[in-house]
Image (tube, rainbow, N blue to C red; front, side, top):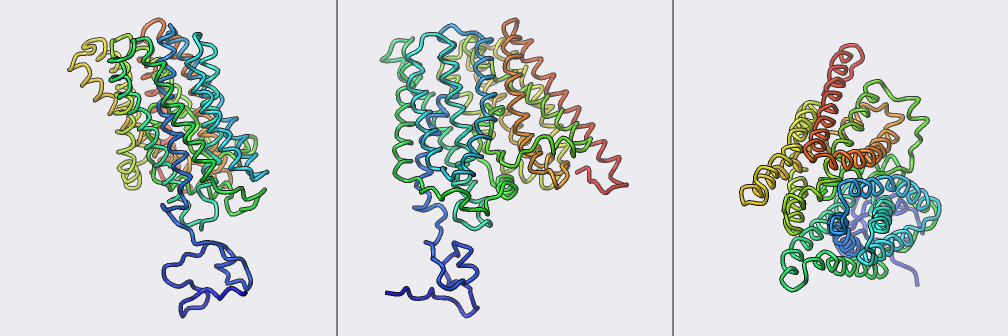
Length: 481
């Protein structure tokens, strides 16, 4: 039995209303080519995103419950610094290796399922340890799995759809992950607030790992049922590194995670990263900007790594710590759209300099406010407001940084520049985490003050880039904005 031809409009080769072309063969009107099912955005075709959303609930909760568990085991700021550093350092090789394996073998489904299984196992075994070292190893495995799954999930999001909807699909993936992450933090806040009524104080954090593990297992089981089949090695050559990176830049963000964990590898595409070729071609302005990136990311990590220990010592309970992190993340996510509009219509360098300067002041202000008012109603309100400011400034910094890297990079190495930016953030995160932990062992005011100084130094370097661009603009057409 032969298949009847697809109904078309009066214009040759154009699909009838309500049908979207879903393959290159359809668009070309090739006779006898197999016809794929029309692509659905946000419908049944995205059921696999629910699995990753459940996994993100587990990841969001684990991002804070593991540091709090380390504090409960007696680990101080130095141990927390090592914990965060390991999580940061494993990210780039995990993302780089997984992306290349997925490209060469086409085994995207297997990689994602394997990483979800690793997340579930790592979260599940963590409360069985009573020493910090195995907890650090398990935590490293969690963030290795997250970093490895991220580029492969991006490939899944853009598979078998036209390039003009890639940004929409990546944005949808970001939303599922961001909402899941926020729900994980909310679960932690609710659990720690209620569980203390029927569990011993030393068991509240330990038992929180149980619902997080359940979320990870459910995400894995749903992924087994719904993840699309592997396309085979290099089946979709449209998903080139440069095109995926453009789609990532254009996608709207819902990034609760990066507000408080900016040093972990985000939704970056490392497949075309060639450091030697990039170093040979980068410009002086880009070199200075990357020095600024390294500086302010080091400052961010020096602040966030020992932060759970500080909040615990001040007297904020686990529920209060979860609530503060949730406020920080939601403030950032809510402001990303505004940040994008501001970046489109204003001086990008000036916006970033202003946001970095505000954040440089806000970081040590946490130590001063916590020390002055403690856990009183006024103290919690002031600290929560500062956390919200830190989140809002991250939204502006993240958007303007991607824009600046793109503008300052020669077109021939733009992809490598974006990959290097993500890699520098992870490297700076590892170094800053160790630095912040060691300084916090002396004084939290010193640690958070040093973090602010590093961020302010980064802002000064961005100012140098702005002046350089303004100086060369009349001669070579480079715009300062």
